[in-house]
Length: 74
Image: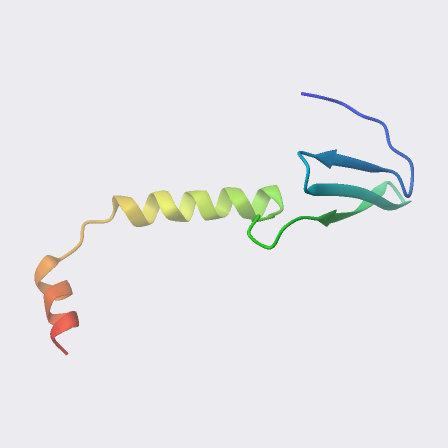
């Protein structure tokens, strides 16, 4: 893990097209801004982990093929 120290209005650049800027530090919380192309997905880690878990559950469910066939016949 790379650990960097930044002050308000300082940035970190990832690759050539992603910038993470420190917008402010208040009451022990850091406010950041992220500039990235629209095709780059950005999530808070806890949301990302929830999405991963939901995807695991969805792929582990057995699908009733007859029910699926009937769905598309409508």
